Image 1 (cartoon, helix red, strand yellow):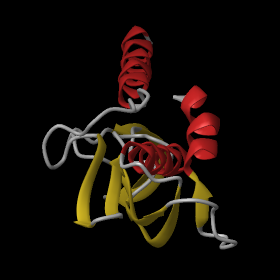
Image 2: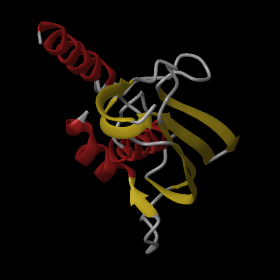
Image 3: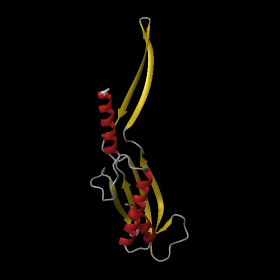
Image 4: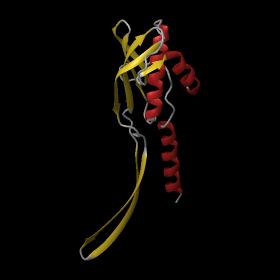
Length: 161
């Protein structure tokens, strides 16, 4: 019984570590969690945010939008429009606990077994990534549902970081 409790406690502790919040910061290295951008041409960028293991997809999407807004303002523009959006990876790739049963017979005897197992991905790569291609502009934002006021997005999302 003590061994089972110790095992479950260890699984809970590992699960808490694996589900740590993803920081809003530059990505260090090609597979590192965080944001990166690539200039396609003046006023057009590809902005990517890679979440850490267990990062919720909505958090990753918000951080990509925030980075697009901050980059737009840093480049001297007022608004940005998303011309392409892609999400990759698998959400919820953190630890899992499962319960299973099985049965069988051997030599005329039947047996039933019950087991508890856990899995934990230690691959270290990001679970979910959001990539946005953004076109930046000056002046009043166009009446396009894919166009965003950079200051408004920054002011709304920044407090959540």
